[in-house]
Amino acid sequence: MTLLTQHSGRVRGVAAQARKSRRRFGGALEPMTRVAAGWTHREGRELDRIESLAVVRSFAAMQSDPAIQATVAVLSEIANAVSREDLAEPNTFRLIGAVLEALQGGLAPWAAVRYAEYWTLKLHGVLPDLDTCAGCGALLPEGEPRFVAAGQGLLCRVCPKPAGAPGLRPADREALAVLDARPPAGLALPPEVARPGGSLETLLRGTLEAFIERRLRTYRHLRAATADLPGPS
Image: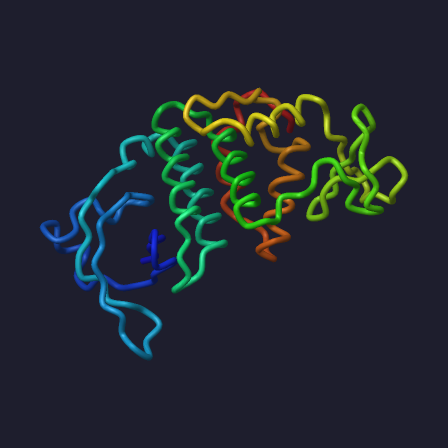
């Protein structure tokens, strides 16, 4: 199993007989459950030994909804991709916890993902400059078209663009300002802005995948689970 810890980064370990010991582990093995954990580091071995897990906060009940379950899988993949073993990630730990709390409080799945993407990029110092062209470095005046190049940032109308590069609409820019200024609890983004296939996803997910140098695989499950909701295809 993999734990995202507040002070020790990512911990990979094995809990012997965990599935057979309700008394020791109970529901602590459910995805994204917040636990108090004890483990023993085993020198020279890839996996630590998980000695104890006690549930602090469970998010299992809300995952009976397939869309929420898929959202949790995306959050888990993002957290796992940006965390490192033996490197504290307190900001990522708090970010994921806050988004899970907001999901339990009714935050829409794609809004939760967009929030997690935005702040993961910002906390790691790789959020694209929203006012500067990534191609030529020119400032992007208010009202001028801005085009999104996945993994690069925003481009002006003059710089070469990938085929099909979408424009960043005023509604997208407003959503980015909301993501920057508000906590996830009570966050409201227009569904057509937050949903997959739009400019916001191209900018945020594209930058995140460029940062971790691989594609994130769990998004397709969330897309399938929310396919009946309105938004760009």
